[in-house]
Image 1 (cartoon, rainbow, N blue to C red):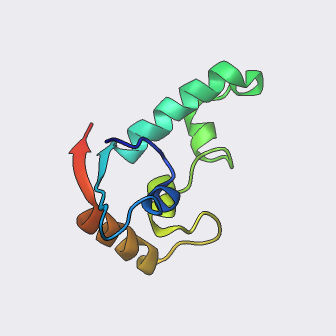
Image 2: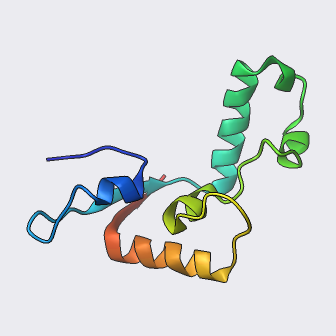
Length: 100
């Protein structure tokens, strides 16, 4: 069986000690991800069509450590070294990783 979801913590609740699961993830480089998101946002938000990539990168629209936030379950507020360590531990312990 396969479950597909971006909701890591919620999906984890589906599994038990008897019915164990393993996450599979494909990670993109964060800069490549941000660039793709910028071009996608330009298509759906007319106000961004005239923006440069640099303006977007300096704006509040740009994501702020999306993967670290998801993995450490710290969706808002500042991140610190403990968030990074938690994200790395979760990837090491719970995920089979592919790189894109």
